[in-house]
Length: 95
Image (cartoon, rainbow, N blue to C red; front, side, top):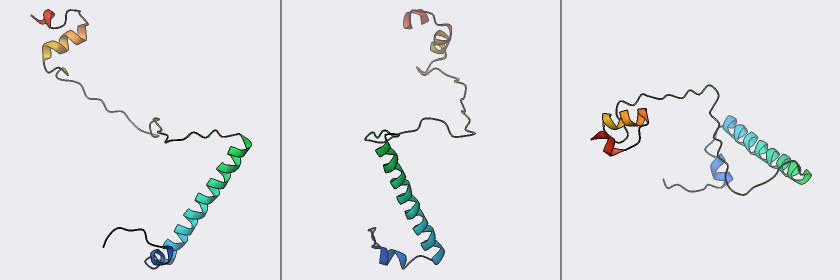
């Protein structure tokens, strides 16, 4: 079976009554949200910007897991010691 967009009549044929009701409710709530958003834009309460929005806030209850580096990003424990102490000199300080 190829992936294609089915017309509503063909799509509904494969759904149960509860799935049809759930789909109709989702469509109605989406249309209600669009209508409410259009009203608020018209009133000037909402500013519209083109493009997508990425929410960088962590999810509720999210935990950040960070491991301890056993080796430097450069690949040597000596370089990691230099990064930890903050001494200037770079590779010359390692010699």
